[in-house]
Length: 501
Image 1 (cartoon, rainbow, N blue to C red):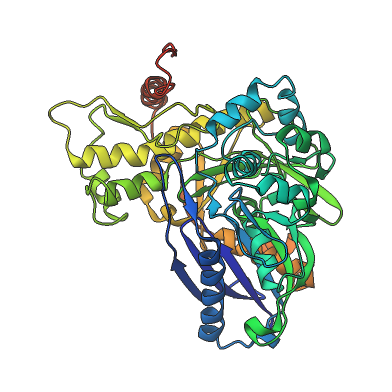
Image 2: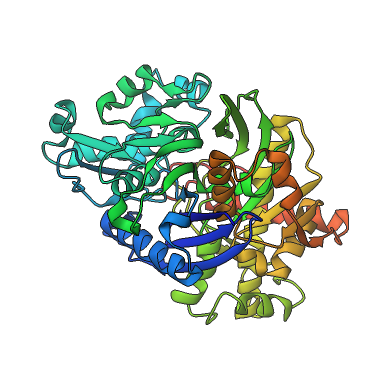
């Protein structure tokens, strides 16, 4: 019997899962950790909370599974992407809280970078557009706002990492400072075509190369966990950013295969093989590196989806839990003309508008909590179509099936509306936590538990298919209303911006 331990470090919680050689879950443990919002639009986490919850949950998961460390074949790591940590090279102590991917404090830095005549090279080299999401502007903000930090970095006294790097560093007792290709590609400092840190980009942003981790294949050996953590060393042989791991876990290995993860944010992705397709909308991304080949995908983050449902629960108290949103949505025939654009932190792909803000529009006296709950769920599907329409346009591939995963996919109303508004079949797998599963697959391939991706395709199973039921006229009428609502939300922080829809 083979066992794989997966450490899935997410935005709001850390999850550890033990899998067997059939890709089946043996045990699971999850723990939330505190989020910090020091100013409007700012978002931080304590890096030590991240490490501690990962270690605690993984020890508990192993105990639940009745598996000892010496019986674990490999560790797989998957993580929230772009979130940035800088720490002291000697002590391993962070110099500042982690700046989370969704933090918008660096919007002005991004505007300065865009104004620089060198800015076009960012999209050409990284596939991304300049945005506060990515690590580069977060590093620059820390250099500009933490006294003496840039000087210390130039002297070689500091190290940088996204969350995978931070975990590997701690799990190996400071022996390994490394990342994988997928996480490196989300920093805005990595040349995805050459597969290396780019000196021009480093100079452009002002980042010394000495603080950067070594970039390793996503499937392969990273190092051993320190024996003091689990009682025996375990090989780390699979690492990927959460969305890349989900693409892998959905067995998207053929050109045109696509998935959409429904979590705090949504990230639709389409696998496009070994040939990158340039996108001025920032949709090109590196999927993973395996067997000396770089694979690419097209996709990007939609900032606010599942977190909009959390907002209904925690801030406006329309629902008591996420599950209630489905029943409320089904209790009314439609949204009564209401649209909710949840641009709490601006709009990411494909709009890339840092000045957009959230808006509920179309309100009349007859609107109830149920209509707003329904509009919130529908906003997730609309935003997904915004991005998938752009992916189809730039890739030249028409989507036939969308594989879905993540916590919100238990919501049947959401998935049926998604199929309707996309006019595309939506498939939900038997295991909706495919981010962890993908990391397990990678780690397993890294030690020979599985020999090829063909074996993984055979493991994937569909739980439920959602087929489009909506007529074309209704679909396009609803979507046209959504596009008008988005237009009203755009540029809200810029009083001089003209409305354009």
